[in-house]
Length: 203
Image (cartoon, rainbow, N blue to C red):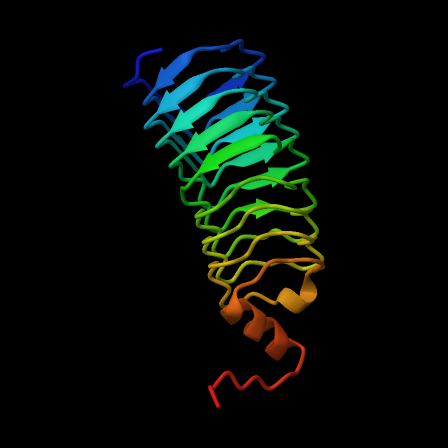
């Protein structure tokens, strides 16, 4: 496929793109159904307002690509890699999300509810305004993430590393915490959410 190709409003069904190099291709408002994208690669590609139903992204690699406002349903990302990618406003439902390699990137406003994200390394990812409610982030590394405004209602955060994470407008009291690793500012915020008055002034 030409790296400059652009496809708009197409419905792609049952296609085999196994190990294809999609380069910087552009897809807008396209629907992918039962498309095999296993081991495919993209670099600087754009998928905008696309829908993916029962697709395979297994072992695929995406570098500086964007999946903006996309809808992923029953899609597998087993062993996929997202390096510096933008997934702003995308929705994942009934998807396989682990194992998954994520290196930085902007995932602001994503919806990933009731999904197993345990033991992933999401350090430094922008997850602001994301909906992670009811998902399992047990032992997940969220160190240095921007979680401002994220929804963590009934989210499993046992053993998760939240040190250095931005937690403004995050109701940690609504999450399930056990052995969760917090830095001082996070611990103070949690204490205040539980009604404590914290005085950190030195005496």
